[in-house]
Amino acid sequence: MSIILFRTLVAVAQTGSFRGAAAQVSVTDAAVGQQMRRLEDQLGVALFDRSEKTPRLNQLGKALVPKAQAVVAAYDTILDDLIGDPRMIGELTLGAVPSSIRGLIPQTAKRLMGLYPDLHMRVVPGLSPDLLEQVEQGVLDAAVLSAPARVTERLNWMPFYEEELVLLTAPSVTETDPRRILATQPYIRHTRKAAVGELAEAWLFAQGITVQDAMEMGSLENVVSMVAHDLGVSVVPNMCVPDASFAELRKLPLGPEAPSRVLGILTRADCSKLQLVQRLLEQLSAVAAGNPDR
Image (cartoon, rainbow, N blue to C red; front, side, top):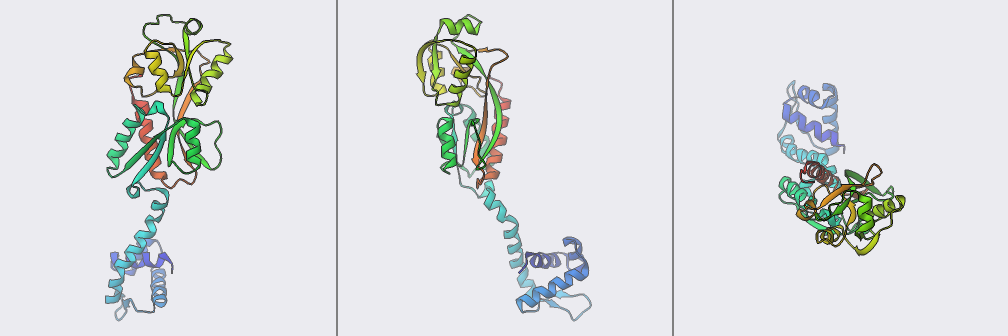
């Protein structure tokens, strides 16, 4: 039985006539009459009183209208359930690189949960390669991470902000030439397992810069902590939403060939919460672009 027949029946009830229904569903008066005959034939009952010139819904027809409305409403919203209408979703499991946990993610979560008060978020920190794997496996609904080296057809990559890499130093370091600083100060590496670590290493190699290795840290926030304690310097992204520690440190430009980290959201191509992820993307973009404390 076609949904069109129920939709036309609802239109007849709402407008009070075949002519009004025809205008509402964009068919001719005759087509409305034919559709209602077909509906009666398929149901095996009479839905209209045709004793007068203008057919009117009989008692059975009137009783059927609410059920037809429910069927039409269910049909019209079935795709919402499949693509993730935020009103239908109880939880969002979001992966996030550690550097986003202290500023970007909390501010974004506050805005998103303000839009959807019943939403429950579960945030899972991790390095970009690990988060990518969890998205692929369906463990995470989405992840905020650095741009993957490759994105397969099974994945959906949505970038929202580009962070240029800078030389990070403690306020006590007064030199302004990044090369001199890197040649004379202990260097704190960000693990090569992370996308940021790979970017920094590639830039140092391309520039022919040899650093004085002091330590290697597993997360960007730990690198920041070591630099804040004046234990060395590091090449890191100029975070779009910095925490207080990062904001107080010196950020020196690396020059015209400075690389950038691109942040974005990664989901599976068949993500069942697409609408919610789109709202998340909007809030992430707004928070990242609107932060004045960089």
